[in-house]
Image 1 (spheres, rainbow, N blue to C red):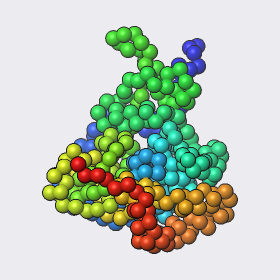
Image 2: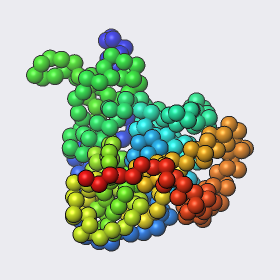
Image 3: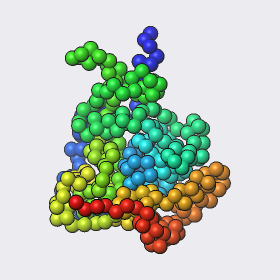
Image 4: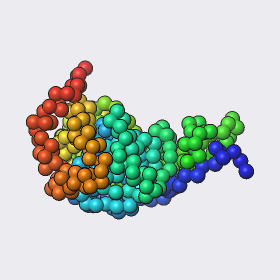
Length: 329
């Protein structure tokens, strides 16, 4: 038997078969059609029980909160989830008990805000099957899929317990004889992404750092985009370098002003730390959390009603004042 650290024990939740993925992508239309729809319709049509879900952004920054709330509101179940620095998005889906398997790099923790008590309870309960990765290797899984290869070689995580609990495989480089980790491609069934602007066809742009969203959009079989603003295609074309997802990747476009709230949207509005603290406090007790979910998500018609409940335009103006504005060059 070999060294235990050279044998991975994690479950591979998605098929890295590139040819199988290509068969699906071949069926996607590249027609320039209007994809504008409501959040409710987007979740109903493109997210199904049992699907594997990828959430864009990073931590509490530029997450698609409106879609996450609707997933809980529609009581989607048995989802797979990519926990690529998932904080408030993970917290929301954990509260709704929406997923039963998870590739994790960073979950449960809300960074400086502490550990989400309910998310921790869920993960410790054994109700969720878990496979471990580092932030880099989970992001590289998207990249492999986006490149159309079944895996990427890396040296990261070799010789660690993370490798042991991953689904990576140790291989030997044919050129140098060095040991490498084969990081399998990840093709999510559906990805959700919040952006600064998009046109009705699904050309989506981000100001600032894109994190792993560029590769995630290209790896995913279906893509739902929520956007702060709907703009003309001519405006998109003025600076195509900001287009993180072209229209042919996108299946639905939802216009959701403040769509990352209570998360941060760079150059737009700061995170609502008071509301996130309420979340953390409510999670200490399951009955309190149930009441909190009913008040803020389950008994709320839509995301706009949720924003009104949280203080509406007056509160959003306060958060806008806290966020540094982008300096035009």
